[in-house]
Length: 354
Ligand SMILES: *Cc1c(COP(=O)(O)O)cnc(C)c1O
Image 1: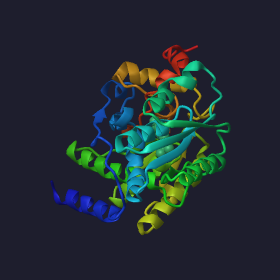
Image 2 (image 1 turned 45 degrees about the horizontal axis):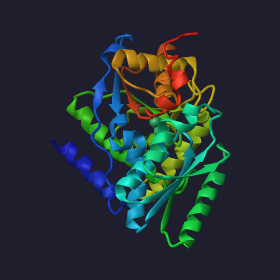
Image 3 (image 1 turned 120 degrees about the vertical axis):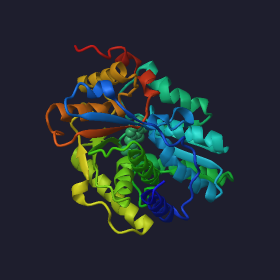
Image 4 (image 1 turned 45 degrees about the vertical axis):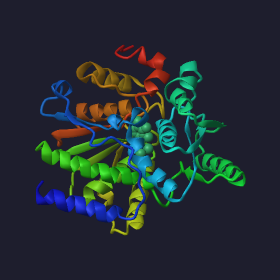
């Protein structure tokens, strides 16, 4: 390895020194060229970073994020982990898988965030797997009340404490210490190493943006290593203005947490909500088409909530000319594949245009 690689690694080690982490993800995940999808767009090269292949419990971006929460939980001697999310949350599935592997008791609260009462949505996909990992399931009726849901999961944690357990809560709402983003500071270094190995420099990285921890961590990590590549956050949950504020505040909190100067400037933060409609967890013709294209051109499985929306956003902006200044584009496949089975009715219509 050359000297740049060494200094990059040294920088990351210094930044993360003393922060507890438990390694759970299979890394590095592959960085692949999508030749048949790229062939559809003249002058554009599309690559995919396969973070759907992080291994644990069907993988995805949350495996990288929870390395830091569960590292902290183990460091504090906790024996029980709790969190709250949507019925089809990839996050909750991944936490439950990690808890099993680490021998922690797990309590998962599921919120009704999507008005989908189909048997598949309520029972299959991530919900099925979360149960298989042995998590105790709780329910929360409201899906748009992050503070309320966190309040309730903290109340359950207090009850467990009364019973002698040592609970650790992974919060849903933004907090002062966005630990999950650290996983993507690590991923940024991994990407930079892969760009060097594969001898290419991307002009743009596109990533799904929900809680915003992935986008913020990636952006922060890239700037930390001196990369100025553009990062586009495809909004999956809320509009681009709200998402922009979220990313900005995560980046501020990361700087404070890691005692670094502000690495990310306002003009670095780019959010786009072109593919968000009709809302979180809901399909559209754009998402249908993106999932179809990935499946039939590349043998890649995308989900309707995150990775399908992310590619739909990229395709929309490529086709309307908004990305004409970029040539080499990397799309992060953040996982979410179990949701395909929860959306079985919608998936059966993939490739149909009416
Ligand atoms: C959670 C999730 C995202 C969004 O990541 P954030 O860090 O919450 O912004 C994207 N894709 C998948 C599959 C996810 O589960």
